[in-house]
Structure formats: structure tokens, C-alpha cells
Image (cartoon, rainbow, N blue to C red; front, side, top):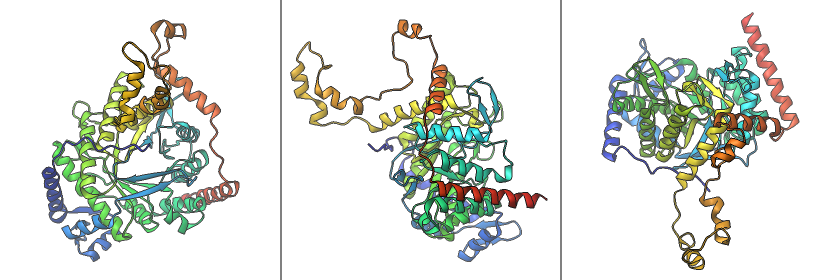
Length: 485
């Protein structure tokens, strides 16, 4: 059964319209800085007012409105097994693993350490097995044992090898983006097939306030050219890189997202995009990003509403925490931010699985726990079906006063659909729990993660495709090595 949100709203239609008008004023009067020359020239040729010296593009309202019309209201992202697909449209909700963490909670010691390429492999395999995690995120952690300039090809190769679910594609610079396109084209069966059935999800993060970096804009242009979907998601911090008021942050963020979408649609009209956010508040006590803050949940709800207002699919961040370990703080921050994003109808919720410490750290155990949280949220989104069958008058009559329903066929037929059946949550009585070793959830999840990594084997990648991908990886390594000399 498909999972749909959209029940939660915090802004009225009039308030959405006010944000829209304020956004158009910002784009036309203040403008955005575009560091990539090709994009700046493209905006100027389309009618934007360009300050060449300052690299500022002031974008008229009609360019923004045209881009919104050209961007599709939905699209499908495919895994390497084309039977696996995410239909990012309407108010469907999907959950993703976290991405780009630079540390790992070691599965054996529980201590934080630097992430490696083996961790990328393990997390992709884990995501492949976890039923409530829909997107594996080949950039789930940043492997620090691989040279930085070739990380992108190792991550993507590892992702394609270890999951049939959907994966990320790197966009940091033209060369990096093209490497990802070449690899995905091999898996898809050619560039034309890749354009018909996209396999890459590109990440494009405007730099708040109101800036578009050179490298990421290069990647955006490449992905748009090859019609690979791109999520446009600023990481504005209220009180630091955006106004302290959430309304101010939303207005600035809206200008950053829409200007990114304008560039994507000018490059190739019809480019699939996700209207996104990674924004939250700066914690004024510490000066740190607060991804687990309740305000992050509010920003996600409002972002979903703005995406629906424009008729565009959305990307948000939920299931986040600022806690350093899988503890009570992690549990309530994750549950609140994930539930709010999902209820609002964010189509693609990033960082939903495995994220700790504002996504700086990834945890195998936390990914298993988060799979359970995602399952419970999914059940909540399905709501309660009201029909003659579910109201069950005949079954109630058959049981009668003082009867029970344990032996009823109706119970067996509806149990799996009506009740979420947890895999690691303990509902036993205390005495039985104590006899089993009094294990806390962290310990139980560690055992489950080890079991999955020992037993689960993803569907193998076609041998010829694997060899072609290896050649590309080796070619990129050689190219980058020569550049270093």
C-alpha cells in the first residue's frame, strides 16, 4: 500500500501567497550570486539583469513562473533493478538513509571512528535489507580511506554493487557529474535509456544566503542536460545564514530553491527537480547546527506546503538528531522531525535512517532502530480505513458480549494491514525480558545489524556491467593522479 502524507498544514493559502510574492521581490530586486559563468550568461540571455562584476543575477518574475510551469509535477527514480522505483509525486512519502557522514559508531566497540569504503558497502547492504528504508544513498558515509578526488566513483560503484534500491549521484563539478553519468549509463544500457529511466539523484545545495557555487552549478547543468533529477535544498540556519524568524528563513530559502530550479529548467526544460530543504536553526547557546530541533520540523512542514503550492515534488530532512549516540534524545528528536515531515507530505525524506550528531556520524544500530520508526510512521500515514468490512458488525455479532476475536478469520485477514508488527521493539513482560538478558534497544539493534550484514546478500550486479564500471573507476583514478603530478 502506498504511503501518503499531506494531512499536516501550518500555513494558510494566503500566507503561502505572501511568501511567494516576497520571494519574487527578493529575486528581482536583490538577486542571487551565481559563480558559474555559463549559468550566469544563460540567465542573462533569458532576461535576467546581470551584474557581471559582482556575479549577481536579478531574476524577473516571469522567468521564475515559467520555470515552475516547465518543471514536472512528479517523476520516477529507478534502482538498477528497474522493477524497483520511487514515484516522487503528489503526497507519496519515501524514507532515505542519511548521507555524507564522516564518522561511524563502530559496530563492535560502540566508539566513534573515521568512516571507510567498507562502511559504504555495509550501509548499502543494510539499506538493501531494511524494508522501510526506500533509498540506499550511495553517499551514505564519506570514505576517508579513499583519495577525496576519486571518492565519487568509488561510492557510486559500491552503491550499484550492493543494492538494487535507488542511489545518489555526485554533482560537485562538471567532471565529477559526468563520471556519475557515465557509470549510470553503463548500468542503464546507454545514455538514452538513462534519460528515459533515471538512476541518479543529484544533490544541489545553494549556499545561504542567496548564493550558487561554481562547482555545484556545473553539476546541476550536467544533470539537467542528461535529465537526471536534482534536489535543490539549501541548508540555511535561522539566526546565522538566514533571518532568525522562520518566516524570513522560508522566504530566503524559497528564493534560493526557485533560482536553482530556474537554472535547471533553462538548461533543459522538463528537468525533474525536488523542491527541498535542509534548513533549521542555529543553536544560539553553542553556535552549532540543530537538525533535531522542533523548528526543523516546522520548516519541513512549511516547505512541503510551498512545494504543493507550486505543484512540485519535495525533499526534506526528517529523522534527525543532535544526539551523539542512540539514546532517548535521539529517539524523541527523530520521531518528532520524521513524523512532522511525513505528515506534511514531504515526498523524499533524507537522513531518515542511521543519522546521529547532526548527520556528522552514522550508526548501524541507529539505522536498524530508524527502520522501525519509519515503519511506525508509515502505519500512521495510512490512517484508519472505514468500511463495512473494517467496522466488522458481523464479526462483533459472532463474538457477542463476553466473546473474543483470537480465533476469527477476520483477525487473521486484517492483522498484518491494521497493526504495525515491530521487529526489534520489545513488548514482552519484564520477567521474560530479564530472562533474555535485559538488553536495551541499542544492544538489540546491534545484534540485528550484525545478523543482516552476515546473512543478507544483495542481488549481484551483472558481471559485464561490473567490469565496465571498474574500468571507469580505474580511468578516473588515472586521470586524477595525472592531474596531481
